[in-house]
Amino acid sequence: MQDIHLLFPATPKGWQYQFVYKPIRNIYFRIYPDKKVIRISAPSRISKKAIKQAIAAKSAWLMQKLTAFDNASTPCNPLSAMRDSTSCMVWGRQLPVVRQVCNARPCICLTPESEIVIQAPAGFDPGKEDKLWNKWLRMLLNERIHILLEKWLPVMGVAPTQCRLKKMRTRWGSCNTVAKRIWINSVLVHRDPCLLEYVLVHELVHLLESRHSRRFYQILETYLPDWKAREGCLNQSH
Ligand SMILES: [Zn+2]
Image 1 (cartoon, helix red, strand yellow):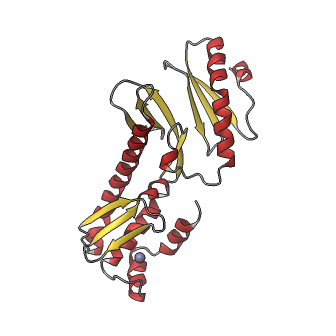
Image 2 (cartoon, helix red, strand yellow; image 1 turned 180 degrees about the vertical axis):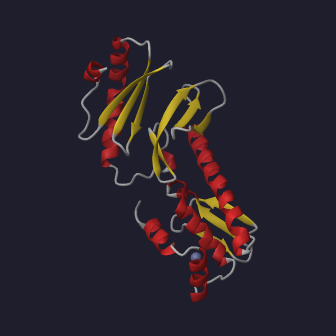
Image 3 (cartoon, protein in one colour; image 1 turned 30 degrees about the vertical axis):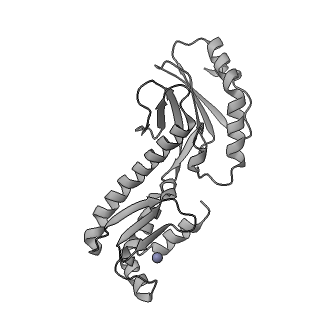
């Protein structure tokens, strides 16, 4: 296995290769920015020459991605940049994205190994891919919000009519106390789930006390004694 590593192009400082043979059909490249690891998995019966060719074909792309990770000031992945991206920030973790070409209906799923697999036909329309990512990330958020509402509504004795998602520039969440409608900023899917819980509970408290009064913070403190730490974390630039 050692000599396989000689085939790999030199990486920017700190990055490492991991190579594995697997019972698969194609060579896959995964980038784990957290660990600075490039993982290459190859079919068990593939020749060294084929590995060399695959790596040569990918090396410019690979170097470009690694340099971009090293220069990125924030690990957050805006949705518009998901096309051709090699990882996606989900619930505060940068997870590798594995692309598989398949002619079935395009889909995205999360594997038990915490890899995001996107299956789509070759030449999949970039606009459609953006929509697919959007839909998937919103589904993740809605699932978790549902669980959180089941946890908190009986405890707090409130009943919002709706809890909806919206991309917002300046706020993490908002609450229309008359319509009892809560809006949650959809970028929260990229952050630690305890931050989504904080934003949701904060907005639910508005159904009990509309203003940020002393009473508001007393209620918030009762339900989430560590809310200040969560708020501090939320407002850090990732
Ligand atoms: Zn508020």
